[in-house]
Length: 226
Image 1 (cartoon, rainbow, N blue to C red):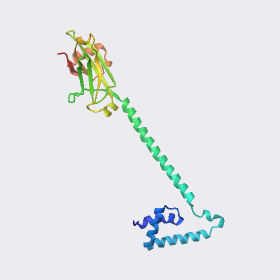
Image 2: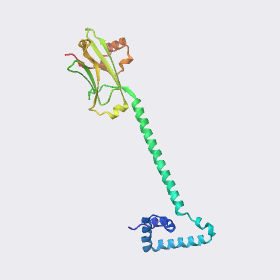
Image 3: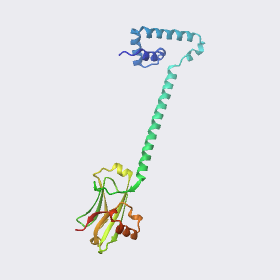
């Protein structure tokens, strides 16, 4: 394989000192056979090295040029620096990812009903339990309250919260369930189940009843007794 003269010229100092790799040495030797310009450059380098070495005292000749051990030490130091730099970068990335995950996990918000996807459903199981199913995310908390209607029946109103992390990692077809009402004596009096995007726990009983009476459009009917 033929290499450009620019690459060979970069390797000539290492070749002259005998510290380049076996593959690099072979490449330089093959190039010098065919390239008069690089061969001439190498000869100049050899002549200069010989003249410079002769001007050093005998005891200092060994330090006239960087030896193999010194060059290997420099390479090791560069390698260690690169490894440390890569490790530091990896730690920064991991730290940022962990911080982002914690932030998204702590970023809790109210779940909003989507009429197009019907992401919230309420079903009554065969044992009588009332189950709410939330699709596309996982609930962090559920708040429910039973209010008495004018006809004496009871309506269950509930709300949910989720997190940005759950929104990201939970698939659209995955559902998390919550028991709205168990099969007890009160279930028989429940005639309707409504979902409210506003947190139910932030409203008193009277406020919830008043909101239901004055703004029924804010309540989504998800189940009604047949």
